[in-house]
Image (tube, rainbow, N blue to C red; front, side):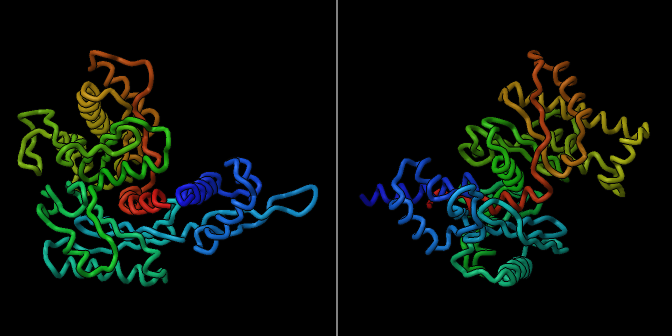
Length: 368
């Protein structure tokens, strides 16, 4: 009986979550439960402040039925994106929606003073939200580095020179569960959260640096040692430019924004020139897309799935860019396709820190 009650409790919560708003009668009908049973569980969920009455449904006869909805801020997750020159902190509710955010200019330093300063900024941000401690599910630190599968340790961090770092450098100052997450995989996590139709795909996060993630059965595939999807270090030219990893000709050296832009340029300026038809910029952009097409073809021969292009570059991409990419991949491949297989990410610029918070949200939802 205890198992049945727990199951019904969970089913009712997730049904309301899925439908946004439902009446008692609708819940009873959809789950084939009696009204007394539904009433019992709704009362408990209300008492625990997981759901609330949220208005009334229209009715042409009799009393209007109360609408039940989840309390989206019953629990929250915190996402922190650590970059070389700044940090971004945001709070995410149970819908995965950002309701508070903060950005700070702060140069990364691999020392105790930096770790303490970041932790105090995060704690101050949480304090200003005025939530009870038990409502904060955890803090995800998104880093430009590969992390252990449990999020405790950084196993490869050349960009920030943080290989071997333990989450304790932050968690010692914070009374919440904390974990490290790879920034590209965070962006892919947000994409999965926003789209329920991905299934299998390769996610390319094209930012200042390149990152990747492999999605299998709507899950980020980490691999045996946690570095599956790190296509940025796939060799595309053995005699090419030196990558930050110490090897030559990695995909990073031809398909990342720091390669595309000159030192004084911004993405806004670059794409203004491209879309205005300035020939030198158009040629640079086409060369970049051709290198990307070459790399996509190689990856696609190993894992024949759709590609999602995300990261800082995604808001600037247009259909005409995808047309060129499809055309050039089909020219290079042994197996051309008439169907589209390259898409633009649907997540916004907050994709990385949102994805750092979502694992805590998802774990809570799974536990209800």
